[in-house]
Length: 407
Image (cartoon, rainbow, N blue to C red):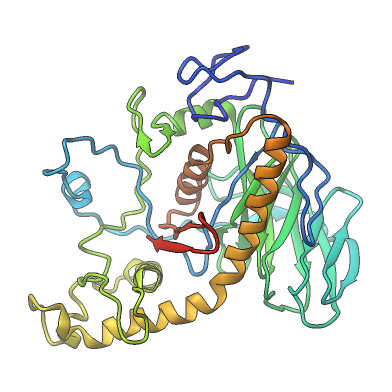
């Protein structure tokens, strides 16, 4: 097996043929072998050997939140703001395009009931529906079209066919995993994207894992989708600012992917103190509503969000308490969002439990590094779509307590 490009323990880059990581000393054997992924309603045809699982609570609910790779290293008190570093920006139109496609071919159909099940095609596509995803028997029909070309530009690199899944347009009550066959570049990276033929827009799919010849994504709804690939050379340059633990390394040049979203300009002007209907805070509500406004309104020429609805639109003041309607909006969206978020959390809790059990049986004893690959998914999604992305980070241990924050 080929030596992986990055250490699975600390995320540091590895030299060709390296037998151990020069940063943390961990041994290298082509990846951590953790056995096949199993669990309630889940199956997988490939083991963890040679692929990196990503516990990505990166739930692309609307068009994204914001995550910016900027190295701001100082002693703490005088850290510059993103606006200070990047300056004022003019939002750019969304990345849109179209595909030159072959004829559509229906490759498989099947029915999945409330107890869950799988739909698998002859070319390797696997739809894994967990128990409780549907309340009644639901039909699935899968078709694909070869991607012959496109006009998105060099930033989009399809490495799979364009797949279409028709399940009647239903929204699942549990996240569904889809394993998509793809020509994943050796030493590179890959992730899935929805394609909207009507608008020409792209939207990143939450990433579960990357294999040698497939990518696993998670979703609760379906439209057309494909896998985008990043070759090893481009991937290394993209990750020159590597994530090790929680600290940005400056061993190489820092890569900045700028969506033009500016905190202090494109977010809400008030802090997150929670409210009567969302006493635990409304960080997701603030993030999602600010992202939606930026993508759907600011990019279309509307004034920036930060001061527009201050004092209920009567003009900026220094008091956040007079932003009543804006504050209420963030709280209501938080309440609505949380009503559907718990299923994702429970699903990934099961995933984590399986992962740790499999890793322990292999004698590793420590969870693999996830930060580098989450970083890769964020920065690739922003680079491909030109839009900010949403992330919710959950603290799941010790169970059953769980807490989260969003951006």
